[in-house]
Amino acid sequence: MQLKESDEDGFGIEIVLQQGDRKAPSCVHGPTLLFEKVCKGEEKGRRFYACSACRDRKECNFFQWEDDKVSEARLLAREEENRSKMPPFTHQEYCSRFRKFLALPLGRRFCQDCQLLLLPGEWEIHASHKMSQADDITEARLSRPSLMLKPLENKKSNAQYLFADRSCHFLLDTLAKLGYRKVLCVGTPRLHELIKLRNQEGKSDPMKSLLLDIDFRYAQFYGTDEFCHYNMFNHHFFGGEAASGVLRAFLDEEDGEKVIMVSDPPFGGLVKPLAHSFSQISETWRKLQTSEGGVVEMPIVWIFPYFFEPRILECFPSFTMLDYQVDYDNHPLYKHGKTGRKQSPVRLFTNLTPRDVVLPREEGYRFCKVCARYVWSGNKHCTKCNLCPSKDGRVWKHCSECQKCVKPSWRHCQSCARCALPDHPCGNSPGLEGCFNCGSLKHKRRACPLKDKRRTDNK
Image (cartoon, rainbow, N blue to C red; front, top):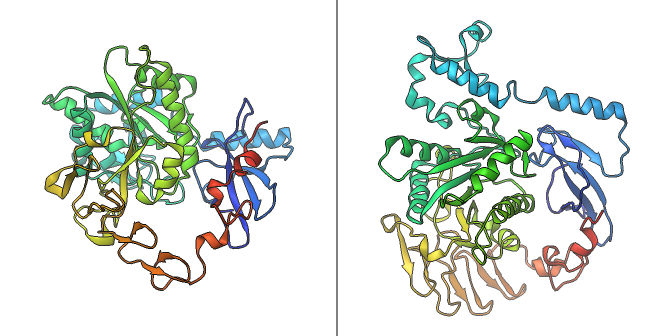
């Protein structure tokens, strides 16, 4: 079953954020999430557990109806299957292997098929595999593991798109200018690498970083105080209490070093569980604050496509979407320098003061005095809307009938009483379809006042 919000057959999938101490069953990616299959117009649906990280059951086939009675034999078989899919070594073992690897007098080998740094006793086992030889495995290369490791590519689970150097340097320069000395890198290995590289160069004030990532392969290169194997969709630390303790220690600002979280989740991920995990990290940070009456919300930069703005702001009303276009080395489309609709749709969502995030003028950004923030040069201020309205980098236009600015390719349709693409199916206005949950024509399902009342899990 694909996990999406609605279906042409008249049903949709809701995420049910569990409350209380009720424990969800686990797959290899940690505790599963509780979903509810809801049929249009019906008050109650049927709930089931599925993997938090994978939207496609071909990647993780865990599925269990909430009311299933699971036998002891099935539980034991599930636990054994989960163990069989775990990394071949513990984090401490990876660290020990890395020290031995660095001490090798001659010959270093990296198995590209297994994505593993090899010790001499393992060379024969991997002899038929594709190898990187000693000349390719320099100290400089080992300090940039994202260049050695093959990016994960499944778009329905944990596809990895890695920051281009331009975006990475901009982010780090901005954080440094704002006085942050600790960066919690959630799914941002390139940023973590750059912080460590700059520290080695010694040309700027040192910064600390902790990488939280679901890709366990990074445990080969980083110590237990630098990396935690982590699933951001269910706030699960694979290393247990010891790993979550590393996070708490990192978030502690008793030494006066300001901390900020920068996260770049998979674009196919569900917003609500991500927001729930980030809120839990923020709450951990808040509890560690000693000053009374200070900042009550952890500084966060959430990197995500602009079309998720309504969902992100629903979870974090204090956030603002900035115009900066984030680009990636290994994404076929999200590249710097493209124009029109080919520009990267990835933006920064943050609770930092917008005017404090200075976007580079040499890349085409300008400061809007009215909006008090930096915007893309093509994002023209609308005096009627009193804002710079463009989301996608193009110049938007004001529609007097809709009383708002819309995309340049849209035209006002009198039949639908709204702006839309010229070839849209006339009469299929989103408002005419009504709320998927209760049928009202006055709101959409996401804003339904009955949704939370019916679907919040109070067990």
